[in-house]
Length: 464
Picture 1 (cartoon, rainbow, N blue to C red):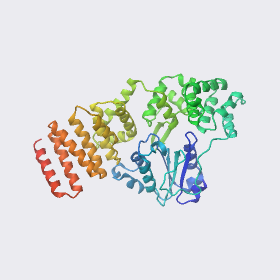
Picture 2: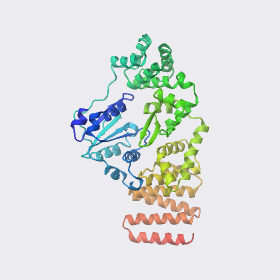
Picture 3: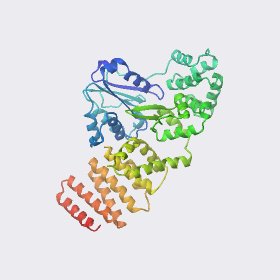
């Protein structure tokens, strides 16, 4: 708190292992009265379920309520211009896409966020902070486990009965991990199981589940989640496990206006939470719970195919960016669309409609200021036997590269598209991509080559 109030601007990293309460601490700080007075404009952005830096930038733009009409490339420039004086931005779960491939882009983002009127809090699993940031002194050490005394206090508050020997066993077994303690306390507080029964289930889960006999901290956390997922309340409605497994894939599903009794039960045992952004309420999982479901549970194939079909049809239905109703729906479901379509490609689905939806998604991403080619590259690689459709995929990929200023990659993609459209005698597709090559030449100031491309494109257009 002192680092946040005594530095201007403040740069704070909250580090720690999974389940140590980093997010809870950050949110608690954001809602302190002295922090609200010091920072009238506060923004919280979670990286849970976000695949890469461009999507994080989109979430920052969403938090700032950046109008779609103003989402120019580069999107980050437009977003940074909106932070008012004395702003505080909290980025949660930054480790979600922190690896050797993305480390440089994450650090570049943080260097751009170092504005004189913007303070920053990040939460991140592990002990390493991003470089290229002047962190406020003193630098906070990683969060440590709860003491036995604090853990005991939490469990005593949850269970109105005198602490028996089985509850005391949980004190040692949970190893002071706040999220594990929270799961145990919630189950004890509901009173549907006696401590002995809960302890027996803990031992069963530990012996049949994680390696190392469940003694390392990740295994302990995994076991505590297992207790909630396979408790008597959750097992009373088997369909709830399918709903939660859906949330682990499309992890920002819109919350129903009237949540079902089953979903209320999942909230009561802290497996899901409601995140509010403006007028939107969405059900989300914290990362450890999502990881548990992805590792342990799978959707029935029929349900998985239905979800995929829904998002494919939605994107193909709202391919026209100019359609206002489509803009609202696609923006609301954008992250889910990405998650579901990417999983379909990675599972080997090879459907023409999936490729068309991926083209639509890529067009929407460019409109929203997100220049991410990962999905459309998969489409160019996995579409077989349909050269015209593959040519359209290369055209969409070229548009991403061109908008980003990667002219060599754009030219290569447009040339691939020209050849593939020519192969199937798609004159209009060939003409459009020759025109796109003219745009590349213009960017390079190659005026003669640009004129030649535009004239050739015009000739082909006259034949259609």
